[in-house]
Length: 226
Image 1 (tube, rainbow, N blue to C red):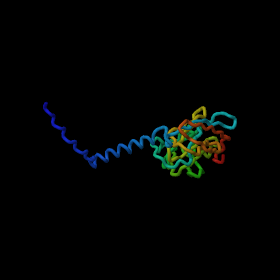
Image 2 (image 1 turned 30 degrees about the vertical axis):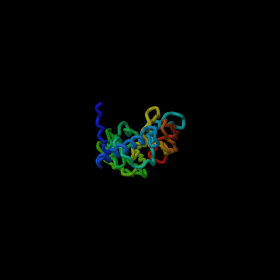
Image 3 (image 1 turned 90 degrees about the vertical axis):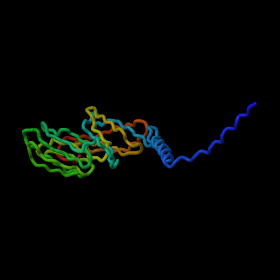
């Protein structure tokens, strides 16, 4: 009977090359990062929805709901340039959300004179009576800027200047939705040109949260002391 030769010895495994070790390490780190960013993790994006109503329960249109203490976050979707026109003795739009450093252009599309002024802490504005092209204003600090016309006291508008994307303007039903918020405890503020703003603390988690606001909306009077 012919005997088979023994199998050759198995060579010991060679350690991976330095390049392969870096590839394996990178795969582990990317997998960990994907887990931390998954919707079920603590850092997941949160959603806040709600309404803004006045003292009589009516919906408040053109209110701004935002996070006043969120800090600076990249937000290319928030405007760095905007136009606030004057049409039929009304600022158009009545509410704007822009980035810190945004430039606002104030034309007047009516045949009568208007002006633009503000005594707000975030920005003082003074554009005298004009028709056509008024002037440009750069908003270089976060906060609320309420603008008025000094000869038409019913005219007013609100500009909220932020360094992040966590802001929304209410619709005709007073509804708003903030998406992509960082989970955790946050101060949320509702503001309107003809009302004193109100702020409340909201906890945001993996499930959509809700916050409803009530503002005491006053009659237009040409100043920001509401």
